[in-house]
Image (cartoon, rainbow, N blue to C red; front, side, top):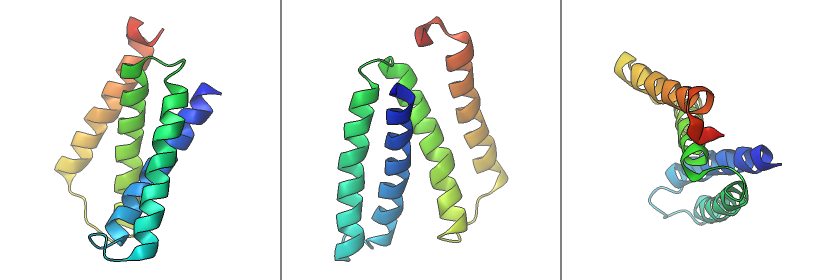
Length: 108
């Protein structure tokens, strides 16, 4: 269940970030409301995951996958461009999360 909670937290964080962009500086009520609900729900599920997953590991996964998915949304939905430097930077973040999970004793 702990990774289900973490997955929900990640998805809700991406939804929240997407609707923060769509809120146009909190000038649009519906996107602003969805942003607030998504982030409150995100942190609730993250707190449930943190009952059994070490903070550093959970946060690394949450932030790393959140970045990857949010960039995907920004490219597909908002038609924003991503350059090679950004792709390389994201790859380093993902590599760091993988290294922490598979090689660090912190994850166990």
